[in-house]
Length: 348
Ligand SMILES: Cc1ncc(COP(=O)(O)O)c(C=O)c1O
Image (cartoon, rainbow, N blue to C red; front, side, top):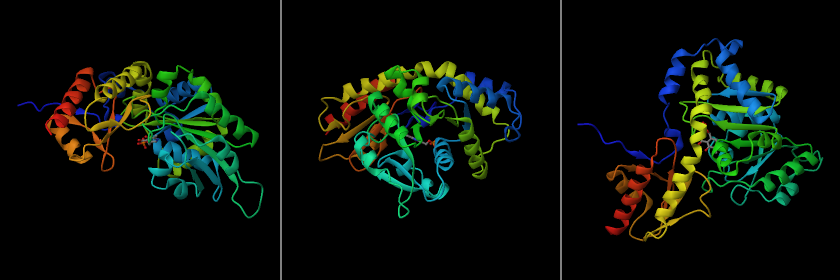
């Protein structure tokens, strides 16, 4: 008997390659990318660099490696990085900024990923030999921890002005920039102009099996390439994987607005269900946190019951569940999740 397909809302990283990606993988022209002769990797790097109006881009195995190579290419040991206290790069990358770049990290609490501009200004160190030198500011768009929130353009511009005033580079962890851009409609080049470097994920909403792109100036990308090599991220016939990235830009990128729309739809369906509340201010993109307020239930119990209904969500703490929409989630899956949640709270 065929196994029932589960509607997997745990993460957009569960997305699988499309049939066109599999074909492109098989037919890609490849070479040894560490020696600089993989034409498919080069084509993807050039396309993404041009998309953001930057000189260069680098194909990376993961978003974590993109962020960590970026930090190590921007700062030298002992210099300080300013980031938001709930940023992925600070919370979920294994302390990589300290390990890889030897960075001194200043994590400042923010609101939905936004560190108050005055707090950044106050955190920039004066030239004083007793203090570490401030060397980098980082932001995240969309901001995962607050439920995929979009940092508005006026905020990004204000941070950009401040960093320019102080001659500091600004990096964007844009793992889900495509989800934010699908809502703002702001051209990628405009995002490119606001940041010295940007990482974007291929392995999330864009559905590639692996990969991330690091985008920036030519000299910066050369430094990041050296770090990637000593981390063991220099890949040989990587064109088989880069081929998926090229397909993703043609085929999957245009579908991202649908993923965001399904997330909003799920959020609306949950409104009004007893014992469950939406645990974020707005549903901006493809991430939805739901708080279990029913005292007789908790997040692991709801997660287990959902699975009985063929729906997977992710427990994030005792009372918080995460739902993420992506190419593998259809309208019918959203309806299935809604019906399952209704049944779970009403069965009580
Ligand atoms: C905001 C953000 N940045 C970076 C990453 C790292 O990406 P990867 O899993 O490819 O290392 C993730 C992964 O979930 C993420 O959500």
